[in-house]
Image (cartoon, rainbow, N blue to C red; front, top):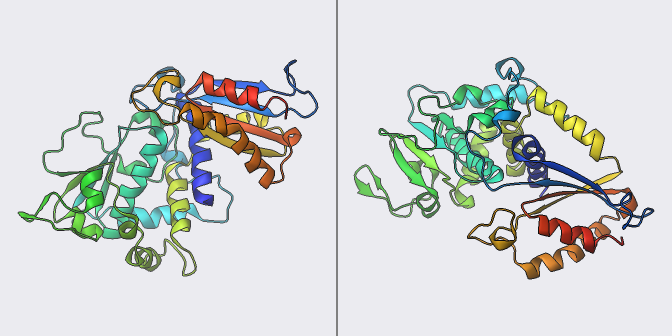
Length: 336
């Protein structure tokens, strides 16, 4: 899907500045690769989580978030400043119940997909919204939602005594919790699952049939977040671009990176999350098996052929947690 490709690419680019060491390999320059037809592979190494104190040495610049919150770089003809104002009015009602999103767990992509869900619940229900995430994320974004930072306890161990805790299991199943002193029974609306009180959400992802229901779509159109001919994918693109709008400083870094590395006609992004024993920092959970990794080069080749891209005018943008995976991809594609 177009919107998901866009957000994955941006998350990868943001991760360049947040949590990565950049390594660039030109397969057309290395002596053991074909100099005429070689790919260019740009590799960034990634980790599965972003702690609140990571990258302190990289985040020493002065961030002017409030001054630059209306600066959007997407060049897609959408007035994000107007949409930002409309959404903020919808999620700032002082007389409504509160939604606090606690987003310290998980990797970068995980975090923002989870935030998308919580923010959407607030937009659809008109509840007050607060976002408790690592300061390092605010430092590199000019987010529309900067005024919704939760500042009482900016920590991975925040306590919310006046809020009902909802996790992914409760939100997806729509029950297993008390609402008005009664057990809920398969609630199938956002309001029904959130209940009649303040809530704190931990990766609360409701079923797509609930969050992307016809009622949600009509609500977004009624509040002019979407036009009459737009759909949920358009809404997803808007929210992710409001959330991930890079700060001027980061935008400069991204432009410099693009200028230095994306020097050919096409760029193809590939993320390889190995986990398990093949990751640089080994994890209990394996995301990709060795057999799957062995099949990946042929999948890359066939996919690129479908786009009619030629290796001589293509950059492969590789994000991985595994030096082994990178070596395998480089060796497998060296004769292209």
